[in-house]
Image (cartoon, rainbow, N blue to C red; front, side):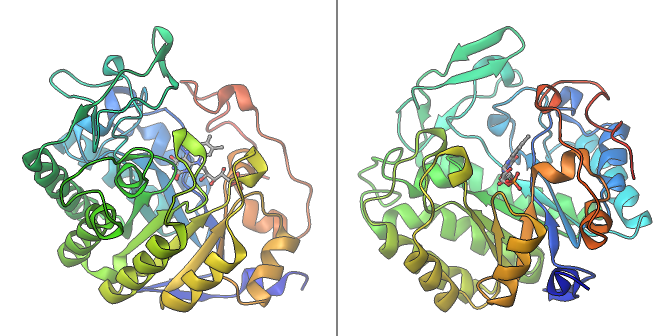
Length: 358
Ligand SMILES: Cc1cc2nc3c(=O)[nH]c(=O)nc-3n(C[C@H](O)[C@H](O)[C@H](O)COP(=O)(O)O)c2cc1C
């Protein structure tokens, strides 16, 4: 079979994946009231052929719901919604991790529930705009997190991870990439704190290391992965001044905790810098769990990086939107449908659950 390695089994933590194709996390803004609807369950069930589904970014906190209609995982209704999603995927034979994404400063107060606030390591606005129901609006300056806000946020991650397991999901991916809260602590552009949560490499690593440790202790390290984007560039991140030092340190910390995987984002197809090959090598050397690559892969390139053993799994994003049965299509070399960009973040079923299954 062509691209044979892509369709081989892989043991990821406690899960046996039937293939090495991961569905990348994609925000689709269909969770009205920040709660996954029956349509969300149907959408993921349609894509259960993936070796592993990683869901859209899902907030552990009311403060992390920065975009319109993204889901949370902190209320009883949200847990019930996610239970329906897990059942739909499992019934169809799949496996599913929920991506925990606290948006931090990347949000707008109009998108947040009553009483919630835009919080970040430092009071620095990203100089970007945010989609809201009233159109695009400039992102305001976030409130600098106090020691007690940080402790609350850490607890929220821990509780959300427990909620994921209570809802019957298979694990969680911590969103440490793309300029959201965890990345805001790591990156020197957004973390200018002078206390022990910032300033030094050790300080900027503290939040992500604590989240990882606490979540792993709560649900078991083999049910935890983390997504990182060392090359930065997205959501006003800069290439970190201590890039190699900080990410080599983090790879070692993740290995020490024993989490199942590190998921590396390469968004260079969207114009951000490509990750430095030497840094990727350093991460591979220092992290002993599985490595996932993601970013504009096709079957040929994905199979090649697997054969070269540069990573263990490859995540596909956009191709999964318009091709629910992407695995079968790639296996049989069938032509892929192109997704409709206008319905990526819209509401309703169109461009969401109405793509043909074959
Ligand atoms: C509609 C859409 C929503 C996305 N939402 C998320 C998200 O919630 N969390 C995340 O880590 N990445 C998100 N991404 C990035 C994808 O996971 C992936 O890294 C990116 O699409 C590159 O992979 P691809 O070239 O195979 O599409 C999103 C991408 C798209 C197209």
